[in-house]
Length: 197
Image 1: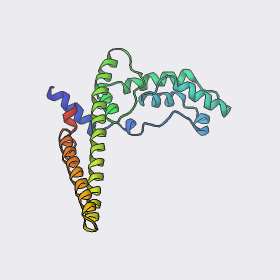
Image 2: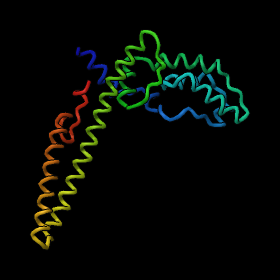
Image 3: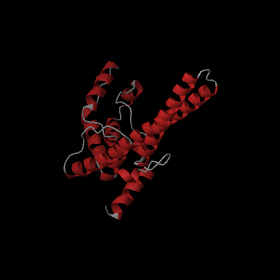
Image 4: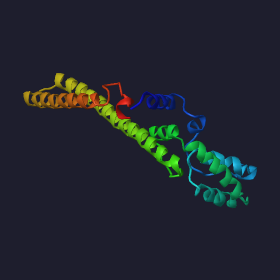
């Protein structure tokens, strides 16, 4: 992988576009937003968030409930421009890295680049989720060992103490296994996203 490719990925991670940070959520529109109109602006925003053209029909349906007619043509013009902003290779990585769904809005030559980088970002996101699950289990095992050791101090019979020692050994084996698994991700408390690009 070339250095410039790594550079833009790091930039994408550090300087997330504002519209991505504000993104997310569903396409439901409020009554006041319906009344305000601003259909071009709304389309621009929805396109920049990677929402599909089907969004305008959900908006129109909701606004119809409020007795407001949607300017679908204006929304579509804005949406087209917003999608151009969304469908960049850099943003593809950011969207995937955040674990967001891709609604297939990109077309033409940018679609392949967007999708390739989206899949790279998604791979990092999924790896981080797996790592977090390992860390959570590790912490659970740690607490369980502490509980077993406390119970061991209060054990009243040899059989009870033997069973608790056996349980502790099993938990310690699991802990070592989890430590080994976490090393594949960078180590305990050290998830390294660069391993998954």
